Length: 307
Ligand SMILES: NC(=O)c1ccc[n+]([C@@H]2O[C@H](COP(=O)([O-])OP(=O)(O)OC[C@H]3O[C@@H](n4cnc5c(N)ncnc54)[C@H](OP(=O)(O)O)[C@@H]3O)[C@@H](O)[C@H]2O)c1
Image 1 (cartoon, helix red, strand yellow):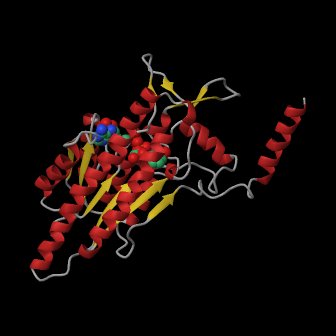
Image 2: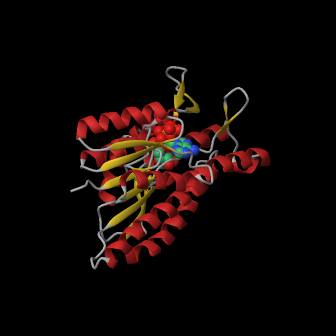
Image 3: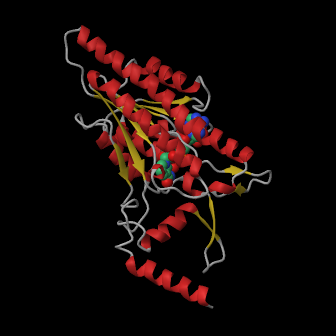
């Protein structure tokens, strides 16, 4: 019998690469998508084939273009002739760089309009519109298979569409609001798609990661480590904060944490239209739990104001 097939957008790196590995380890054939990382994607495909004895293909598509998302789903369909799980994962931060390559940060109210346009184009173009169009084409394929099964007199099997979004939907970071906007906006599409998929036994959900150690969070944070004088990466900042009590589990996520959850979510037949955080407790309200920390800071600021 043919293996089930899983397509993951943006799976040449980080979370997406871990997701294709998780599905390959469970006997799925996988379609790996890359934009710029041709060599990385080819190496992943080779390794998964050797290690798990499945078929893995690497497909190029730029999902920020109008035609990219449909072309990707169609290429996977052409290669395998079936689709059981589709996962929209590709994404970028909203940060833009100046002519010298330095990240430029503005707070919400200070952002110049030309800068905001660039941020929005980058984040919304891929994270919202690209993911939306990927979801449209993937759902159409998933539904068409279910219709074929009905015509043949069978009940459609369970299939799944999952969107990797972010806890940034509800947890704003003051200098990258457009990123959260792109993820929060996509959630509405998840809800709508779930209604369309339901009658065809297709479940549609969003997995909202917290901070995960990937190339995306290896970028400079703008904050300096007072002990070393070195600039910390985003991942390093949140890892230190986690140890300091910012989240229930005292570590940031690993790509494998998200991949395991993605595999599980795609195999739950009676859950749809849900937007679920996998974040180590990052979005738990922490003011009661971290009373001592906030009290100490409040006292410090009161003293500083009095001086
Ligand atoms: N890391 C975190 O802390 C975190 C937290 C919450 C949510 N997320 C979300 O998780 C997803 C994966 O992030 P990650 O941390 O694994 O990032 P990553 O390591 O930077 O990987 C991003 C992936 O997206 C692909 N991609 C970028 N631009 C693309 C485009 N125009 N068309 C198609 N693919 C494109 C990249 O492909 P190429 O390299 O081949 O160009 C790469 O495979 C994103 O949606 C991100 O927003 C991440």
